[in-house]
Length: 359
Image (spheres, rainbow, N blue to C red):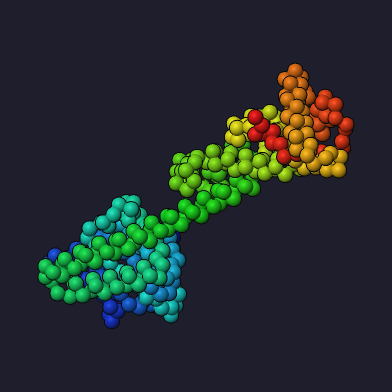
């Protein structure tokens, strides 16, 4: 267990290490400023409390931060904002060098998103361009505290606001990137688990977020709820399978996790506004072909239209009388229709008539 210094004090670096600290009579909002290289492996700083809000930025190297009784490994671009009641210390490997920036401000951060909880801390990661901007703000702060004047106080205040805005930009970018990553994971999970009828609970467990956060994530990225998004994707998958004509309605229903095919048929019709069986019959019927040598060209189109229209009218009448006939294949229905209008049976027939768009 790391030993925490109980009192509140400022531990200054060894002589020769660049830093600045305010005098007791200073009117600056800044209490402490440090920059440059450090050898925390040879010159560690034990954890202690501070009088203000502690900003710590790593430019080079990877020192270890002692915070809240634990060790936190850092990296270039690492930023930590610590509450005054949060003890902070530094260690590193022997003979290891790092380049850091430190501010300790009397007042809390300008934006609530940068304010850690009581006795807590907030960590961020800066990209290279933002890291260079922060290094420039450290130089501006150093020049501002060199001379005590109203102008220098205004420059220091402007540097503080720019510093908070830069860190806020890094935080917002990180939140957006994390949200995109989580949404992509959620979409991938839905595609790999098409048999999940209620994916919301499983998605919350998979992404380690609450149901409210999951709903907010989907509304921001897709404009739909998680359940509606999953249902839309499942119905699209079913439409593609039915359009291919390789699977029956029952097989697709069971593949999507439905216990009863009628439940799937009802959901499909509610989503697409027509029956799944009708889409499958249209696909299979279109796969057949008319043998052109049996009919003269001038009668072919008219005969096709007459045959198909009378066939589907007969089919609907029979299905209304006996629902069992609705499960007959397209070939059987076609033979019945051909016999009804006294046309010679043909093994392979087909046409451009679309039962979903009939008059």
